[in-house]
Length: 355
Length: 272
Image: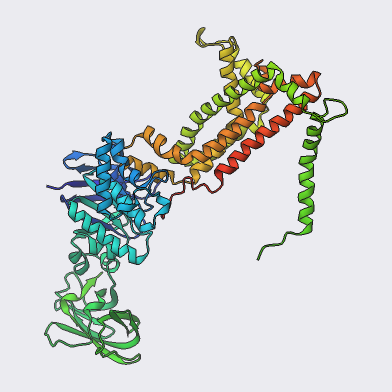
């Protein structure tokens, strides 16, 4: 049974022409880590705020642990929330911030002290309980914000782009810490981010949103490798898009810049001469031929070669389009020169045909 | 490299200082001339020895404290709510708080007397008593008048304090931790407004202690009317008390300056 259910949730702000969130349906299992991923303005934060109680759905229901919380006040939901701006109380020490929710609930002081000590140990800031927020770094403040949200033993943890204000290295280490703590505590978590790497690396499930609707929801592997729409395909990961023409729908044959390639299956509903787009992941293209029967080949001219550290990115021009090819870097890699003609190979099953 | 200030700017700075300091200096010297042929503090001693001085000064201080409390109770929740839920109403509220600059105190006090000197009735049934029939109720009217006069200063101070903090997010953070409105105001918002509240309170104090018009027309034994009355039949004592008043005001402003210097107040770190 789902721990958190959003049923037909819709949100229209006053005087708005369109809905911020439309027909949102989602079940979250207990202990799951679910990310809402999408560009700015897609409705992910609005949805999170409706779960938290800071916005009221125009229609629809939100049920948590079997209880309808749609119209419940935020301070009655027992939901811990971590904000993008940390929102630590400047007038309180770290210890007081963490213990705030417990003191509001009337918890005895010895119990508050013990819980605060536990939380400081969890976030590895045992010595910083007497400091004020302005005396902490951004990463430390965000850890305190997390501890404060967890101290009240919430049923659900919500995080609204908690790492976006931090630099890249701290983001990576802190997100791993967040995930480790979440696993340790087994708390159901909803995480909002526009960073696909964060969403893919942290989540049990990713909900990709666009213009207020869910484009696709599923495990990160499925979202990345089997996108169901052009938006998901292009938003999650890097994607090459090539213009193609249907040559033989029954055989799945396409023409790209006059070169023949084959889609994974027959092109149902299409006719010869139809214009379509094909999507190819850079890491699924290779200059090496495997010799398999289901392998496509396409040729182009090398425009640029970029060394990105662990990855070598080759820019190949095919007709008017530019294709990106990612190869793992190694000292023995035969890197083509700019201007060389290069043949690229990919499996038929990796070719995604888009309207 | 330090920026050089031009001699032209220095001239105008000195002229400006002289414009303010010379009259004060003149008043101060005058206040020391009660005893002919010598400078002495006789005028100060005479003024402080008058029992009326102590009574009126104490009364005005009490009224100032009551006004500060009334202002805080009125303005802090109002400004907070406007910031949090009704930001589009802020220009209107700011306009209302500036009205005391436009409406003279004498118009205000005559309006009070007109409205509150008789019981307010609905269909002949008194629903609100007259506020001018007893000293206590007239003092309430006096505090109300002072609250209106101090509105621009107190509201501006509180508004600036609220702008320096992320009121919305702090409120939501407190709500997510189970806090109700009272707890949020008392434990989160007001502590982060301490500096602003103190600034507003000290400005209100300075205004109330020296106020003349409302206290005169409501016939209350305040310090302002006492100073005016003293000036009608004495020369040196009013000058002495004027210097004392200035001194008190400067002390209040000095305290504000000292408290607000280097204050880390309600600054919330992190991205918005």
